[in-house]
Amino acid sequence: MSVRANPTVIGAFVLGATIVLVAGLLFWGGTGMFRTKYRYVMYFETAVTGLQKGAPVVVRGVRIGDVTDVQVHWGTSLVAVYVALDPAVLKGVTPASVDAGIRSAIKERGLRGQLRTQSFVTGVLYVALDDFPGTPVVLRRLDKDVHELPTVPTTIELWTAKVEKIADALAALPLDELARSLIATVDEAKRILKSPEIASSLKSLDVILSDGRGLVRRVDTLAANVNAQVGPLSSDAQATLKSAQATLANGPALVQDLHRVVAKIDAQIEPLLVSLKKSSDTAGTTLERAQVTLAGVDGTLNQDSTLGYELVKSLQELRETLRALGSLADYLERNPSALLYGARRPSANGGR
Image (cartoon, rainbow, N blue to C red):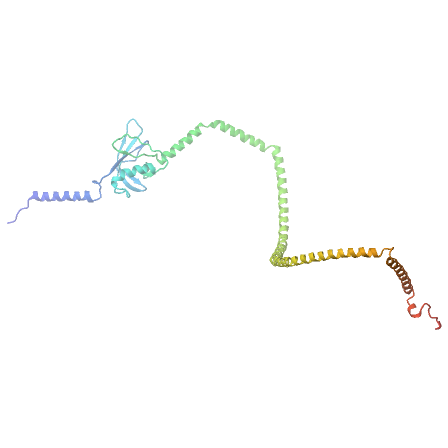
């Protein structure tokens, strides 16, 4: 006899297994339902058409959270976008220090929120967190229970603002007056270009250009001549430089020879000076003795003395003798044969 299964027990078992499976998927399946997330709010002053709940929050292309809600503050132009950030994706910070890290990034690196387009075709938007250093930190503080992230306008808004400024500046310009001035300037330019002075100036300019071309040709010729002369001059200069280098190379030897000559002269100067001093002393002594002797001779040769008289008489006889010798020398010079034949010359037939 078989035992019939109890449907209630089977149903309870199936229900319990289903609950366990769902709980396991929720805890370990990656849905993140039970993970701790940090909520922030951002305020934008533009339309957020295309931004939906569940849109990604991205940092440098990495999804770190989702948009949880989009609200409008009535009576203002602000749109509040609430996001939830997953700390498990943020490396380098602990879950307990996520708030402090984000506040530090806002202050030091200029972390800001910005709306960007996922696709220009669909117009779907997402929230990007990026660094915008130098931008002001603007906090609305409309929700006291949620931390706020400052925002910056979208790229399209920035370009739109620039275009609007340019359009406003163009609108402020007196375009009619500028157009009239431009037309007047063009007319005046036409009149000046058609004037005889301009035609004459153009002719003069043509003449000047012709002269300039001729001058350029002459300069080219001169440059060619100079180039032709540079080679020989360079060779001569090189030869002169080599000669000068050789002369300078002999300079040290000449200086050494000069040093040796100077050294020899220095060695001979001292003995020469001593010899000159001795010769000077001897000459002085001799001079003194000569003066004494001359004084004695002067006294001896006095005409009043006998020796003086005899000496004068001898000198007179010597003078007469010298005179006779002079006459004889003159006669022999005129008659050189007298030394052989005497005063008379021999006759032609051999007689005397």
